[in-house]
View 1 (cartoon, rainbow over the protein chains, first blue to last red):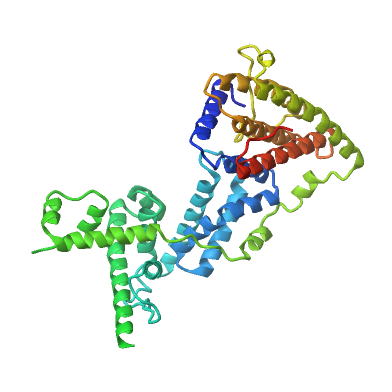
View 2: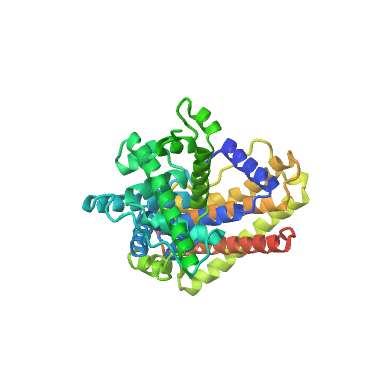
Length: 215
Length: 228
């Protein structure tokens, strides 16, 4: 329960949101309802929560894992972990943020296990198959695909640090804690990852141009 | 000329360059170009599209969840007596809600409670754990009875501000209905077969769904919520 002051704060927030024309309040209320029902064990509520955030969760694990099959496994583990822990969800953050965090942690744990089995650099041989002779360079769509595929070719350690820092907004301290590495190592990995990504993208563009010129 | 290293360019990208680096950058078009490439790549990374999960992912997740029977247990009492009780409860609570909102919409001064009327709603994050069935039922009834007072007090508070519009009240109503649903569920967890509690749950769920439907259609048409 909460008292007068908290309710007034809640009402004030509702009014301010109304004034700002926020469109997502209904979604928030719906989501809060779904979370409560999921905590009661309602499968349908879980399915609806999944539908709301499936893409976001899958995207982050897929970006970190760089592998479709592993990403599906990770997403499955993340969602099962989330629903098993949903009774512990206190609402300090939005449910989407909470499950996203679980997904990141699930992926990083698995990647660390994988990295123990193979060196972080293994699998990267400096050569790529990014070039596609059927495509013309420089268009926005091609650049996006190029960056996406170059990201997949980075070693796990580079890709994780790069994605967590540049896209997820993690600090080096947070990355260090999650990956079990020093802050300095995180910074170093980040600069190397950026340089490697840049080299892969450049190489890809060169290949595309070469293929185009030879046709 | 010696150009900036990858590490230094990376620091520049993050806005924390070592002393003297900015001076070099200002006079070196090559390093400026490198920095711009890194900046553009970072933007492209952030702009990568969201991905769709495999179509069968939910079914794989569902297989691992141990909750299959819960929904049926709570949602289908399956007894005529319960349906009758539910209909009666719909009528009683619906009447009370309707009166409350008629007062709220018309701004009837005489309907306002005295200042200082205590307001309580269920905290969405606080797990309801009634100590006994009697406690749970009392909680449900208390929520239902306080619903009127909360709505009127809400009206009193919001009238002190520039008119919030009907949708704010609609949202508050929705939140209160959610509280009622939650309390009913908590009570039912204690005794799933109790007909009165099932009736409360049916009532609150029906009201909530109708409310959400109204809000959704009002948003779609751009009109206000029409109270039932």
